Amino acid sequence: MGTAKLALEDGSVFTGRSFGAQGEIDGEVVFNTSMTGYQEILTDPSYHGQIVAMTYPQIGNYGVNAEDAESGRPWVRGFVVRELSGRVSNFRSEKSLSAYMEEHGVLGVSGIDTRALVRLTRERGALRGFLSTTDLDDASLVAKARKSPGMVGLALAREVMPRGTTVWEPGLDPAYQFDASGRGGAASPRHKAGEGAKRPHVVAMDFGMKWNIPRHLVDIGCRVTVVPGSAPAEAVLEHQPDGVFISNGPGDPRPLVEATETLKTLIRTAAESRGIPLFGICLGHQLLGQAFGADTFKLKFGHRGANHPVRNEATGKVEITTQNHGFAVDPSTLPADVVASHVNLNDQTLEGLRHSRLPVFSVQYHPEASAGPHDSQYLFDDFRAAMG
Picture 1 (cartoon, rainbow, N blue to C red):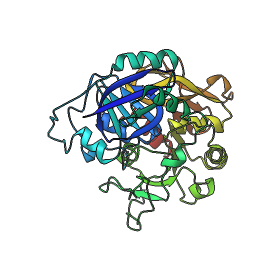
Picture 2: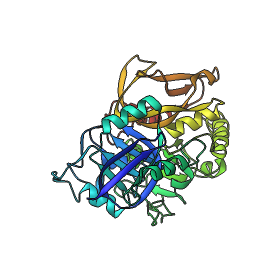
Picture 3: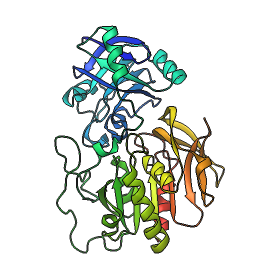
Picture 4: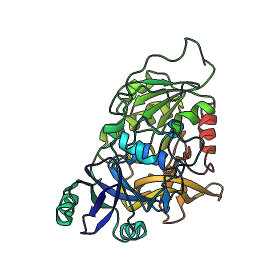
């Protein structure tokens, strides 16, 4: 391990030991409060463009395996930990975290004061950063951090969504065929004619979808066709869905104007005219909010972790949730017929919405977990019930 430095736009520089790949990258520096699930974090496309710092002090102790991946490759730009475990101890492990990151070109730095880094980002908000194992000049690194574009205005979902349509089938998980970029390509048909005819058909609009989402949809008895998030409403409806799912994804929802217009059409023609349910998660929640005419905004430092309390406004029950988002829907801008269904108990931000008349609902957090608590899996059952 050599030296690595993480510089922030405010002039702060943290020096540690490199692991994973060598080189230099920029990104938005954020933190995640999960104790486990680092591989799921690395491979979640919603982290595209970000340098993630883990608050738990030791990371890497149980290694990495193919089964726990949430996409075909890591999307995190850089990874920051207090201590990288020197021993991998788990019967499921196939390789070390450092070897996995090196294989996929992801830079890491360990041995820095992650508590100080997190306190800084909580006080000042998510900051642009630059991580390097080659350029170790503080002034140069800070200048590079300040040139990073940040997150606001970036349509990063366009860079992670699949290129073609794929059928996700049980027993063939993961169902995607990936090219070198890690994005899904068009796959050959994976089900026989007539197979699964009695199962409701869900079309999932993929803006950077975690694999555990289609796994859950299959588990509740659905057959799933995955289309790019850029697919127009006509292309979605051509598949004759019984339900439409709108996925998570990275970046700012506001530049995704075409997707917002598509969802406006689907709300009108699918949900209102045909009674087809729409269910969104994370970026999908933000896009549905925009389709209803609401505003979205950037949070100071976002919500990322597997321990965020959310109150279900219908039942009053509190769910412990997995979250990963830096933007939110402004509840004061929702129309009168769209109600807040869930609220974050840490900062009172909107965590869910539901139309009072149409079968359209969404949540800001991740009920599919992976990794994280399973308190919110009932939402998939609600979606299944809405399809009849």
